[in-house]
Length: 493
Image 1 (spheres, rainbow, N blue to C red):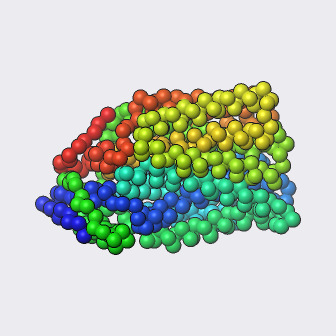
Image 2: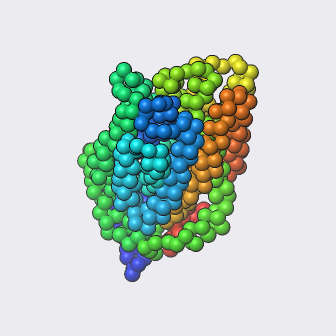
Image 3: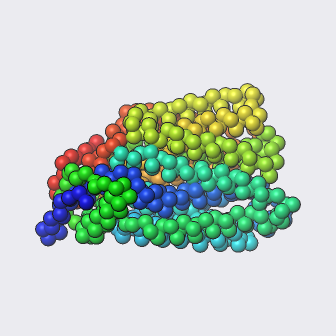
């Protein structure tokens, strides 16, 4: 195996080449294990959100087993799910930076599984609402724990595309949720009060499979060497290197670059806030802009897509899943096909262009809808094109905040920007949008489209000015760790 510099320890100060060794690794089976073990939870999130949106009509019908209206599902229920996600992101984000990535991404998945199982057993409205909130609580924690772990384990050369595709895999779950709802809502197969429960039960089964795979995903070596586990980090990376060398059949090149850090157990909220907003104010504005723009577009509008089809185009509740499956596929294709460009063309050009282009296309969709030029099929086609670009942009928001702040604040930064942005667009959005679509007035729905498009374009302009050149660079080069005693590069602004 290629030689690597030993960790030199002096009391609580160590010099390590672990980040450089991780970044120079070629793609391997080990990286696929990381992607499958951590990334597949986004499929569950997509399954959850889409299923609830598509079964809204059935749950509101007599005989469903719940006394709830469609507006309550797309409004109050959606808002509570997002509120739970925000609270979970903040709570588990803090714990993730303090106690490690691995412990928390096991806990958050367990919370999700339990809450989803309880949702399937709902017998009254309060029970359904409570466990939708707790399901979101677990999913929000997943965003913080998993995005930080993925970026710290994936080589810098592939980080952008992998992060985008993983976040975009949400829409694979959305496709599954859409098709699943078609079967579940077929009363020739399942009674009204059984089919929707089985969709949540399937989410539990898939979650258990992911839990088994995730047990083999390691702790982040970057977290380990900062938090007093330098020997464990060195051993973990050494094991991975030997595994990859055996797989590739040749020795790895020597890693170049070291970093010296003062090890510490935890960092307080005051230091985190000071770092994010005082040392990196422009990056803070960038993160907030990207999250608010994408959160309003997705949480405010796609939550109500089923209602738009049934209200304006007379599509039956049992067939909305077909349409949503199409736009969900378009959403996944965006990060899949455009992801590599974020590593090659660059972050600033790709982030700004995907945001602005999706906003302009949404303005065009709103204009056509207002004129009455669209039917269910052409509306779906328009949305498919809009979301092809919007999905890549939205996924890049998670990538951006997970790589432009110091290692010690990473999970908390993801949690904070996700919570603030999602609260702005994801809690207020569904509440407002459900009333706009429920009115049955075309102008009201057009207004929601225009707001979403405006925020996406505004976020794109911010990215054009403030996005960080992070492609191909190590995380430590993009933002020097707060614990660093010496580093070859440090960036502020």
